[in-house]
Image (cartoon, rainbow over all chains, first blue to last red; front, side, top):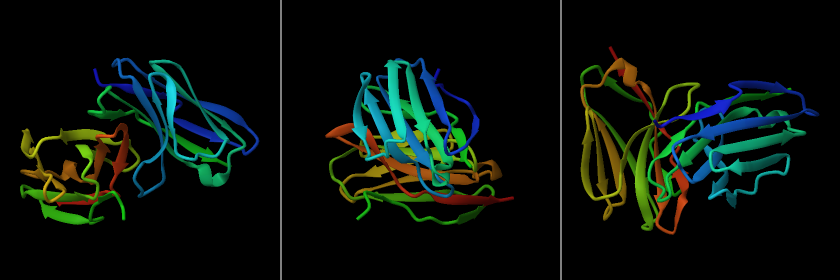
Length: 112
Length: 112
């Protein structure tokens, strides 16, 4: 089973709202990722968790706050977002040696 | 200089032909190489990965890696209209397995 699940599939929020994106995998992977993808662009790395610890933060604005409650779950907390943050947010996981990174279906986020 | 480069395309091939997608990378510390297929509005789907020089075949897909020349390619035999998508090349590094660098993607159109 190579499945990464994400909820919700779609999210519309105002600039003053607080919301969270959720991601789950049961492949025993110890690295989990958040990416942001704009139309016609490649995925842009935001955060990496390795063994439940934040290992990479690509200078992401603080209005995005990641959380890894356990090795299977990854959250992205959103607060005071801007319209330019509208994008497809992708979660991914990979095995310990970095072989094969699998993506979830993504959350389509619209900020009004 | 970008770590991973791809021609943006579009690459147009007739149905049944071989589609050849190319990717070059700049860092000789690159460890593993991945090809993802992404349909419009969907998340990237892993097609192939390769980490040794030479060819790796899986069904209609063949990945080719040449570390001396720093390029990796994907051949799609007997191309089908359903193969029409954007193909993303990605690499990760020996010194940081958990950081994946993506090319900008090549759009493939397979014409019936």
